[in-house]
Length: 253
Ligand SMILES: [Zn+2]
Image (spheres, rainbow, N blue to C red):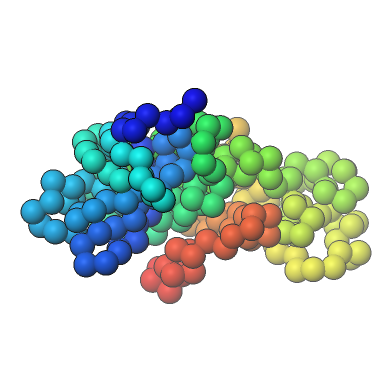
């Protein structure tokens, strides 16, 4: 069925790019329509009715008119601003990382419902929770997104021989997609990263828990940072695009 000339959807703002003197291209993710780009004419003029309505992480009800190349924003109603995310540099950095991942894995059209729900849920929690939980929520999001994409890392058995892993520190290999047991480690080529027994336990916990429980669960800072490093490596290796916001914020922390 052809799109009507003007249509409305609920969407999250993932990215924008200024254009000309006062316009902006805005990329959004809708539960029904998937990822789409829109053109917000005059949005950077202080007199525009769109000004301040399509900021990063906002959840909006948006109406668009079908355009020649890009559909044009006609009306926006803000459903949620998520402004609290911007109060902490670390929380913003996690939120940018999360939206960038959503940009990379979501597609145009239907089939993005789970990606949308996960993003919506995680951004909401980032906006509500204490900033000390941001890194845990990032790990939760990354693990779940990998699961949705069928790219989960293996933390329960050796990816080479399939043996169940004993409770100890192990080595992770991005190229193999998971943990390598001590017997198989010497035969590995490529870089191996140490994953402590605590980090492995926490990864298994996050894999099997809901978003509320993870905020209650206390995880030492060095463990969560080790986990996020391994998940970043896994994502870099197994998805096509590198996450730009991550490298941008690396120097800030
Ligand atoms: Zn093995």
